[in-house]
Length: 427
Image (cartoon, rainbow, N blue to C red; front, side, top):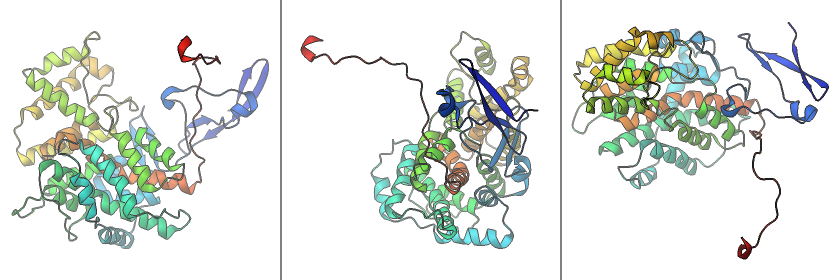
């Protein structure tokens, strides 16, 4: 096989090398395309364009494969906890017990959020969307940690990472408690990372907090499954903002804003809103399955299929089992969740959906679990951000350590050609 491709343009031939990844993916290296030929590429949505080389996450949508640093998502979800996976994504290897214990201890030591942050939180009305609040609070952290990270210092980089992993869950919990009118809580250093997150979110005044292992296990899995997903919209945003040498907190805040969109992180919220609309219309799942198959009907079945996966979303297989365990353990009777089960059953048995590989995806099941846990619908995307935090950090760190150039896409101009200015009285 040739390790080059040839482009012929206006009677001239130009050769460009082929880059090969460790999973045998091939890419045309066009760094010199414009300087050699005067041409640029046009690729709306960057569906065929690699923006970087990365050693963090491998995704094969056709085969339904997802691996973090070479480890399958199935094995990590079964055997690791979220903090181990966070360390793996950020630093490249699974930590031994000594490193993991230090990592957790260092995070606990940095978990205090300045009391003045509460004043910023108080400035938001209860009606504010939690993602807007979280993005603003993450940006506000810069004011309390103004020094930029020295990326050439391993120690500085480590403590910047520890700091955000410590403070971000507090911001997430405060955002939800503000929405629900509950007093703000700092959690408990005696608990594990995920248990502490759950306590900070849900502990009620005058009630003793009790750990439910099935709930914590499901939450742990959800966070692991969302931890990274290659060069998606929010991750690409974190990298391109960071490429200007913007700080870690600023880059993460930009990623949160990108995740907010209903086509990205807002998809699990859209699933629940769809289920609520079906319930309000009588709960007839067969009617809505028929609407989903009708090309002339504007209704879209949310939480089925995936832009990248052309097979069953590997994350959905894992979280479906966790969803079943949570619903069984909590014994919840909820018409919305019954509608979700009905849609799932019909889609998995309907030839229209099976032939088109429109299987339930991770957003479908995560929304079901979050609702069962009592997390408000508007907080679903915040939970997504909490899970994705290690991936964003890992991608930002990799980009800075690789000293990647500032992101600056090209465009194809289709506007007016040069024209003369006309005085306002003559227009």
